[in-house]
Amino acid sequence: MSCVERFAGHALASALVFAAVLSAGAPFAVALECPVPQPLSHPGILKETPDRIAQVENLLSSSDDENHVQVVVNDLRQRYPGVENAEIINYLMTAYCRVVAGLSGLDSQEQKARMDRFASQLSQIIY
Image: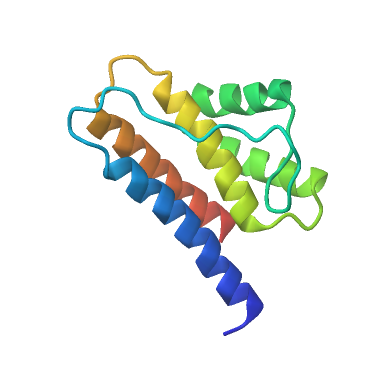
């Protein structure tokens, strides 16, 4: 297995683990719990400012349009040459989770369904 195949599997596994964590929540859970954006740069973590994170969240919340996601992915790849797909997936899943958690009137199944759709869409764009 090549490095690219192992990495692609790892990134997809990250997205699937994230989705599985969301689906494993107790049926009585009220709020979607999202990862917290990391303020410090570490290997495997994109360092983004709070303003930039807010911009991405606003863009993702304005529409489920695949083009918006592609724009963000392209921007991240341009600003972070050599960025790994897993980093992009983790960053965007975190941002979108915060968008979904902020929507009112969604029960936990609706939140999970939105996160699942986004993870699938993101996987198709990344790979």
